[in-house]
Image: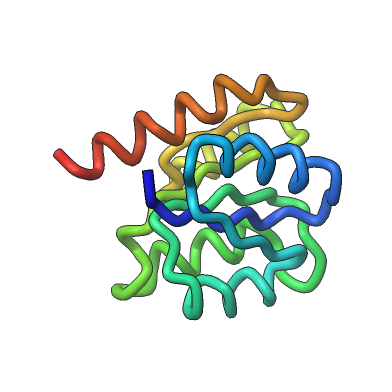
Length: 125
């Protein structure tokens, strides 16, 4: 796989865990640690999929997801919300903003990778 994945999360340990496992699957990875940096990286890295936390410094994941899905040049980028929240209202909000998946922390890495592959494979159909 050569798909590009952008991880936007302010938790270093989560980011490192995802990087190690996604690189083992041959994904190209870039990272951002706040919402503003994430928006800049979307433009420069042009990811196929974004893993996005909702609680971020400088710009929330909610705001960033909205910007991605409202922008014609970004709206086809798949978004997985990966957050510590397991609240139904957050799940509903994620899907209403256009997210492709909502996953809660803590998470099983294999499940996240399976979801990424599923989303990217469905994009190609």
